[in-house]
Length: 606
Image 1 (tube, helix red, strand yellow):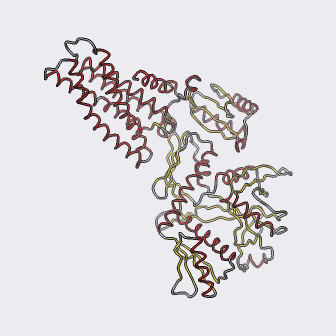
Image 2: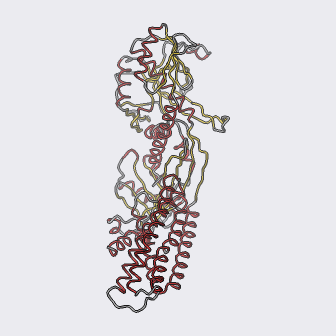
Image 3: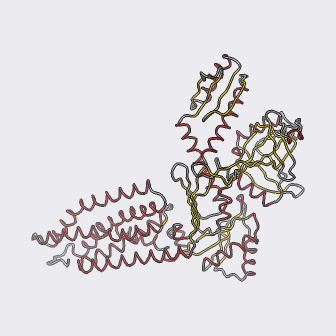
């Protein structure tokens, strides 16, 4: 059993000797295929720029180009992007350099964290005020639709506190509406207002508000993950921190401008009916008809009057990609979910021949701050398309009137990845260069080697022959730890994780010290060598188990409640405790039994 475990540890730790090569990973957008012709384009562009590369291959629908250093890798990214255009994602990556037979067995090197690999760290804060406003707007639209369908007449429907307020014509309408809304919205606090006749309020309680905010945060995390995937970042980290913050780590990314543009963009679409009966000149002068709003066309600045009621929002978009129409003008093809398809179908069947506008909505920072110190956002809305409804639409249609292919591609990317539920602002930004990451690896490795060598020397000097056994176990402990870290898909080695390995090296011999001291006591009490070894291991086991179990519990708690660096430390500490228990107790006893078991021994070299 010991031999099998040790052999497996060596096998999965072996890829770390080969390391990783700086590489470019090129894939097609929208799940397209990469052809040999694109490989030749990249190869030709690199040769033309006189940029050396180790190899270039087409594998698993990806072009993988390997380099000797990160400087060549970064330069090649710009060259490849320029050569292939916008239809391909050129991602910086580190590709394992182990032989194919080892890769086929599942052997891969450990994944490195941002502090060792280099990249960008963002701490983002979600604007929960906007999330609550959007929820309020959603409630207003739902109430209008539900009351209209049940033919319940109301005078006024307006936002109120954390909900809405509705005024009715009479008590009968109030009672009927109250019964309907309580049934439709059980999570809202719905009650009649005493200070206003025939008026009820529907507000969100504390539990519902927390649920809305948690949903906004979780949806933003999901959408940011989708956008990171669109950027083509290898092994990104996107995780929640606190009540309204998100941590994003992008290994290998050095150009923060593009990442910030895509991650923080809050763009979506609204489809609205054009109020073609309204007087445009009067609207421009401030006399808008009831239930309408004035917007401007993004291309020519022409005023367009739209009805306030939103037919459909971008939340129902499931897929978006850009292409060219029959006149070679850019367009965005939209696919909707079933609910969105039904809404679009029901509206367009009754409005064939009427114009419908596509409104582009983007939240941009105003430059002002709230009393709490947060950046304020405002909605910037522009009409990007006005088209006459020619037929009943359903789940798929297209948007035209877009200026350029680049604009169409960016719009498709944002819509495909999803619209952020609420705007986010970057409150902290850090960039770790690849050279600094390399220095961290070298210094961390030196710390591990020096700690390992000093412990070896001490054990050899103090315990002599048994010290050799402990040193063998210590070396195997390191191998097993690295092997397990390489084998676990989600495990990442960080700089604090390397500190955890150094601590493990020191802690790993604690068990052997307890065992060896107990063996010395047994010898002093007059027991023979075989009995001393037997009782030494058996008597020390409970103490060793207690000490390691309590430390393991602490490591689990650190992993559960900690973030980033603390998790990295907790992972290596927890794995190190398990491997040190195995090597210090099982491996050393196996070696000792193989050496002196079944033989007459007069004296132990301890």
